[in-house]
Length: 270
Image (cartoon, rainbow, N blue to C red; front, top):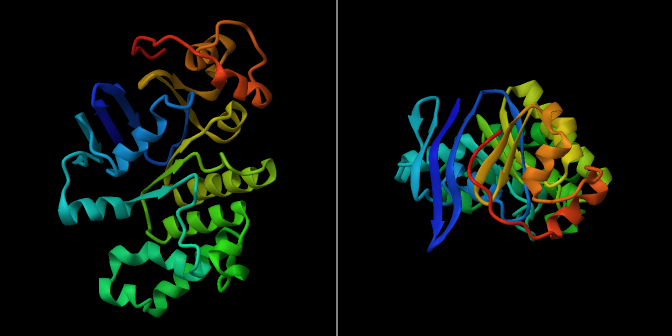
């Protein structure tokens, strides 16, 4: 279980996260929704410790995460895979080498920099590329791939870490609908088949409803909703996105919500 208690993150006087308290059970697939700037990415970066919390605690199966340093922190980041909106691949390297970068924390640093990886790592990388339907591109440069293909390579790189928790920060935001569905199908299959806990930041409600067991709504750094997708009625969605009028809450109008200004809300979940 991932436990987050009274988490805060401040950037100067700005509170990006305010009193966030959550419990994520092992094996759940959780979607986090909200406007741009709601604190979704900051939350994932604090969990992975790419950013340090200003206050509060994070623990995984009762092991403290928020205070880890040095080798213990590197071991946590190995168990906590991260997928980014912009893929974060090395463009000039081939797909296979990019995936093998997920094994760096397991191997000798010098040998890894020389791109020497043992046979078992290479076999694991190929098998993982097959799972994301990218094995045929193993020797192709990453910068020659489409966005959807690059994101699937990024998922494979995270998987070879053998993570227990997978964090996906807007993994489909820059993809067309066809590739977005392929990426989400892969994440859900990984969640179901491997039992890996998945936290996925999403902009679109339909995606969260279709793929996630549970949805967390954030606004102004606060958790304002935590429940089943079926509980996302129009009133709840207005609270999350800050609109003041009725609308059809679907993919087609999401961008309209995000353009509306809204006043801050109190940090109380429904």
